[in-house]
Amino acid sequence: MVRGKTVIERIENTTSRQVTFSKRKSGLFKKARELGVLCDAQVAVVLFSNTGRLYDYSNCNSGMKSIIERYQHVKEGQQFMSASAEAKLWKVEANRLRQQLHNLQEDHRQLLGQNLPGLGLEGLKDLENQLETSIHNIRLTKDQLMIDEIEELNKKESLVHQENTELYKKLNIIRRQNLDLQNKLNGQVEVNETITSSSSQYNIAARADPVCLQVSHPHHAERDEQPESPTLCL
Image 1 (cartoon, rainbow, N blue to C red):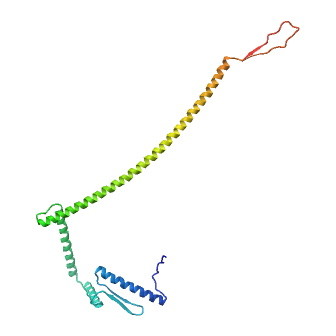
Image 2 (cartoon, one colour; image 1 turned 90 degrees about the horizontal axis):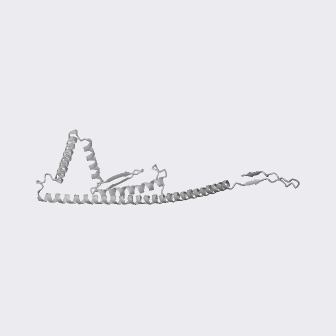
Image 3 (spheres, one colour; image 1 turned 90 degrees about the vertical axis):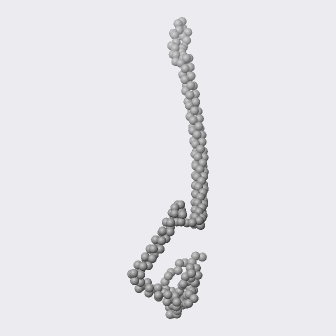
């Protein structure tokens, strides 16, 4: 079950407020104790309830008083530090950083093979071991990068192969459709040629054998001569 978000505001109910105070106080002291153990720090917590009751916690062996005195001493020192003392403090810090930079530059030159005579035998051995470790780590990183690139190329090759397969299937479908369409067109042409050939043969036969129609007159018994019957040829 998901708990709702607690609204941070004053609890009006006195009983609920007292219970919450007790629970939160225990949690606060627990966190202070864990902070002191984990970070090796001196921790002090001072707490007054709404009734004026004092609750405190300190992980210092000499008690809360020594931590409060230390706090007051540091606070007063920060407040009354003179300008010259502050400048001296920053000067010391600058010298420390300058020396640290010099040491880093010296180490860098030695890694490049410079200023080696001043190291001595042990220093040279340490530098050699350091370089071998660095080269080993560099090669491991390079090999891992190459393996990753090869795997990526293999994935791309697989995708391209799948795409080529799909395109080949589509091409075969288009070829079959074109072949079917060509067969249909060839069949239609043959039918048209057959119809045209039959019509031509009929026209040729009609022209070769004309049809002749003859009109005959009725016989006249009383007349000796019979008139010629007209003939119509098609």
